[in-house]
Image 1: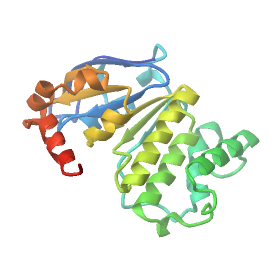
Image 2: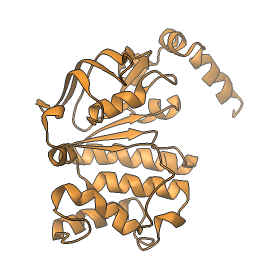
Image 3: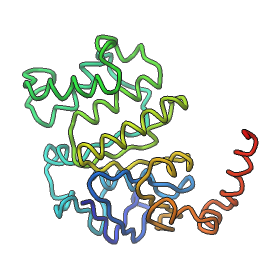
Length: 251
């Protein structure tokens, strides 16, 4: 279980997140939603221990900030938004970096277990055939899948994703989120993902954490959180009626 208790966190000029509380169970997909500037990425960075925080972030009753970096990498993995800077490694080499927490060197001495995990993830994300391609030659959508594969071969208990559907077309968005939902259930992992698209969040999330100005506006199942009044208060627009009006154009 992931437990976030009375969490405060910021960037040195005051707190961005104030008093957050929520839990997540193994096998769940958690969507973190909210307007720009509400603290979504800050929350992911705090859980990944990239920012100092006050309060508690517990995974299976262990305070994450108390762990050594390699031990933390076996517990959590963060896939941030795509950078413009990366090394010209092959797809296989890039994905293999995810096993670094379990070895003493990069690329060398991959164990049979390492190789099996890498092959399984490459296959499931449809990257096997292109394994020798340099990542500098890939599109944004392909890169997103490669870096997700690197995250998954880390085999953490908790996967943190910041806008994982960016750069993906609709088909691959649905495919990716469907894969993550199945993977979380099958492997009994927790996936916490920032999503701006509320339709995708509604369709795939088991639980939604809706943030507003660094506080929890609502938390629970999508049907409980995506109430008209709550969304309107947070986003300043009648989200349900806007969505219905847009969908009527397809009928």
